[in-house]
Structures are given as C-alpha cells and as structure tokens.
Image (tube, rainbow, N blue to C red):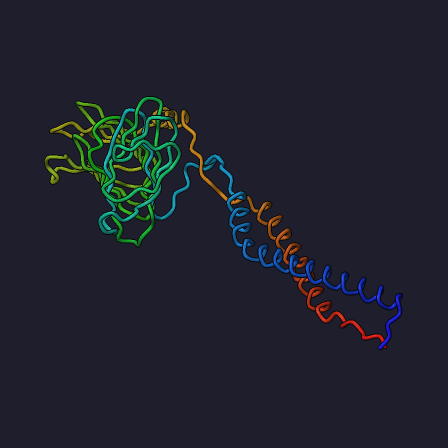
Length: 286
C-alpha cells in the first residue's frame, strides 16, 4: 500500500488534533466534575453571605412564649417548666459589653438553656425571647433581686420572684423595679396576681395602669398611674438597641438566579461534551 507525502502529512496532523481534542475533553470533564462537587459549598457560602444584622424595631412584639428585658447591674435565673433539663428555652440578645450567661461573656446573642443565670453589668441590657410551647407553659424567673425589668408573658404564665414578692402574669405586660427595701410593680396591660414572697396567701390582683409596692411584710393598695408616669418607668429601655440576624431576600433571589445560570452553563457544557464524544475515526488512505 502506497501513501503519498500529502496524505501522510494530513494523517499526522489529524492524529495530533485528535489527541489535543481528547486531552482538552478530559480536562473539561474534570473541571465540570470539580465544579459539580463544589457547588453545594458555593451555595452554602452564598446563603451565609445573604444573612444580615438588623435592629429590632418592634421591641413590643412577643411570640407566644413572651420575653423579658433586664436593665444594667441586674441578674436573674430562668427556668421553663415545659422543657427538660439543659433544653434550649429561648434566645438571649445583648446590648452592651457586660452580659454574662452562666459566667460566660456574651457579645451579641446566644441560645439560652433552662436554669440559665443571666447577669448584666454597667451600660448593658439583655432581652430573652422564650420559646413557645403550649397554653400550659410556665416560665419561672427567679433571684431577680435588684434593678429594672420589663416583661411580656404572652400566652405563657410568667412567675417572677423578687426579694419581696412573687408575681404571676399571663397575657400581661409589666414593669418591675427591685430595691433592697421594696419591689414596685407597674401593670402596663392585663391583670396580674402579686403575693408576699414569704407568705403566698397574702396576695392582691393588679390591673392595667396600676402600680403596687411590696415590702417584706406588706402590699400597698393599687395606685392609678397616668401615661407619663408609666412612660418614665420604662424609659430606660430606650438606652439600648438589640440586633438580630435575618435573611436578605434580595440576595437570596440573586443567588438563585446566579445558581440557575451556572447550572445551565454546566449542563450545556456536558451536553456539548457528549455530542462531540463521537469524533470520527481517522480514515485509512489507500
């Protein structure tokens, strides 16, 4: 069989092009597989990047479990009776630099477990949002012996113990101020029951816009407050701003569109790779 020089040259060049194509195809397939394996990691990274920190604009809103806000230089222990020991009962948000959760410093926020002991230092406040459970849930707030607090019990019953009083509240909002010699309770909405800490049979009901003063051995008659007086009681809350992490849905949409484009490019690349995998074999020249 005789092969001319031109035909031999063409065969050599054709073989070189074929080997180059096969090499590029292998590299392309490897890159596509690598992109496919790393795609979940990219998606997770993009989702994390879509989170943003925003202020809590509506501080009066409470989920079914209610919430508790505590002023500076104060402390309290929290127990949710509907959850087992060491269970997460809610989330704590921090404003300031001196918040301790069971002696561990918390900067922004943290999950809070039952029997948690929370302490605030100077210029620091905390907000605890309790997890809802059902209509029988009870949140016990104990060892609140000094300072200001603001509570919204929502659908749960909150039982609050101070040096002088035991307070029971459900579907109510109230402000509490504790000093060494007395506890002052201001009812902002709803009806609550107040009893002497050392004699629970000695109790009184207090209603919206009323204030009660409790000492170790006495409970005052309810005193009606005007709106300005109530506002002055809770004005300390304006000194603090809490922040929470939310999802930036505009970024999520952008991520989804970008991911769809990338997926389409990968699928087109694979489709092209399969369609050209049947590259014709070299012809024998006679």
